[in-house]
Length: 134
Image (cartoon, rainbow, N blue to C red; front, side, top):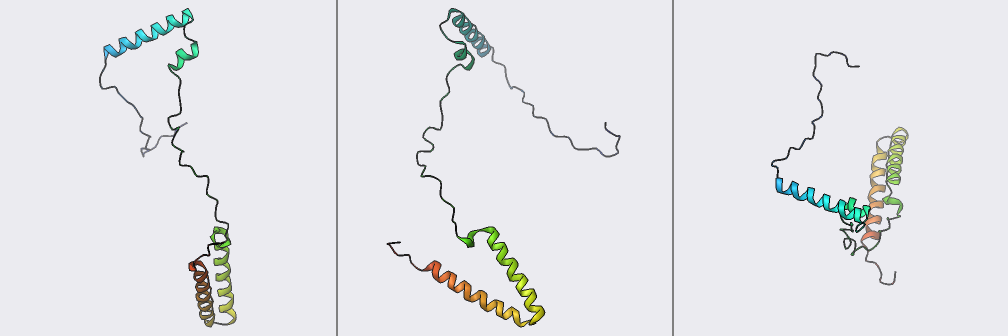
């Protein structure tokens, strides 16, 4: 039940396609083909399934996956996991807060040093060229 309202609510737009023209020749051809198909079905020349579908469908994308190389495996590194990164940020913030309470503002310098050293080690191993036998 709808209550009367002062405000007008938006209603979704209706999708309505109106044909631009009428082709009587095409309509006549469609009627003739349907009549001929019914006659052939009555004689047993074609089956009812063939009559309903008109023709058999085949995959139109048969060669679309020809270049498929398989599904890439996800990286299983602990640092690429979103949950691990969130946990790391949480513990850094928690450690910073606790350190600020116990040590004062000097803790931010310590966190900066530890972050710079760990980033340096990470990028050193990441940018190091890989061996061919690995």
